[in-house]
Length: 129
Image 1 (cartoon, one colour):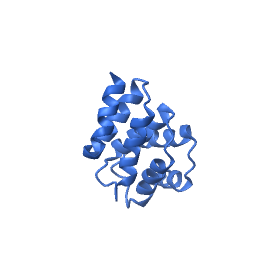
Image 2 (cartoon, one colour):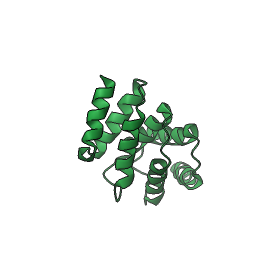
Image 3 (cartoon, helix red, strand yellow):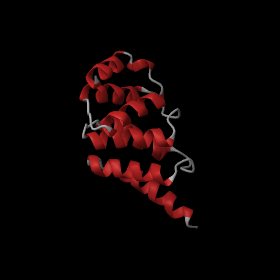
Image 4 (tube, one colour):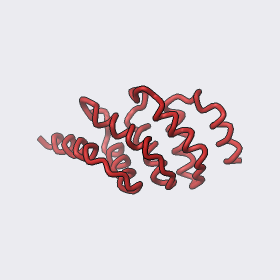
């Protein structure tokens, strides 16, 4: 069943909106059914987008969390998400859970991105001011 759904999702991958991509990879990771073909296709859809404004902070954090949890590597996805977060003028839309899931995902996946960690750390420190 999971393979069938995954392959159908891959067939229509271009039709997925931001929330749909987040939901499908989160669901597969949550039930511990990593599907490398599905994850590659969904990750490629994120990377191919010109910008990630349509992805809210929870969707972004859930996506990288799903890849880290599943152990499915997608370096260009992690780079795209990090670049997007670092380029934001403000991280005020992020809640603590978004930060913790995102930073945990990068650490767990072994993806080093010092500017992402610095941006998040500076934002958190600024909250105490």
